[in-house]
Image 1 (cartoon, one colour):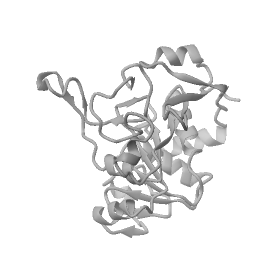
Image 2 (cartoon, helix red, strand yellow):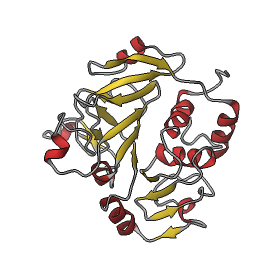
Image 3 (tube, rainbow, N blue to C red):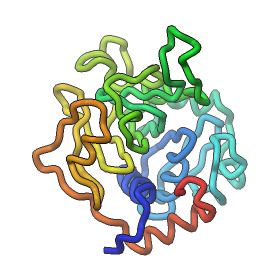
Length: 256
């Protein structure tokens, strides 16, 4: 037990634990790239990393990647076939985990990475970088893993713009649209870990981070959050895990 860690560090380490050694993981821009680097450096040395930029790696990147087109993802890589190759593999159902972030997420796991405000009133809508390939990833990956810092403006009743589909409006929605992936499985925030009810398809709190509580998390969530009957505290990271993670991001580009 150290207690000497940032919420963002525990978020990255806990999220990496959701990745199983040997899986094919399609990672989006941002924190997912750091999580994959940590997983490859620790318990998941045999995963295959795909990115929208077209890199395919079976070995850890030699440096911290900032974007999906970062040279760190291609330097001494194991395959560079371009965007069409990795996106086609995704649509063929060859990706185990679609791993994305975003600006907002709602109770059905729908993610917004396009903008906030009223889409019908352009003067009120603020654009972000955009979704990139996140919609394809969320529709086609066998399961979706999401990582999003938590506050009431990010965990919302309904996203302002649907960039990447979760369970849409509830049970049966993905099936009606013939989406091949199984939808969201786990969401990790700076306060806890969430899973999805198999019947209602709604998000529920599974774990809370040390120093947090169910009450604090509910106060940082804008919808009526369900809580697992066996909700538990997340294990703190070890000193070795923190050392590895901080070496991967020495300037705290992601971890600040």
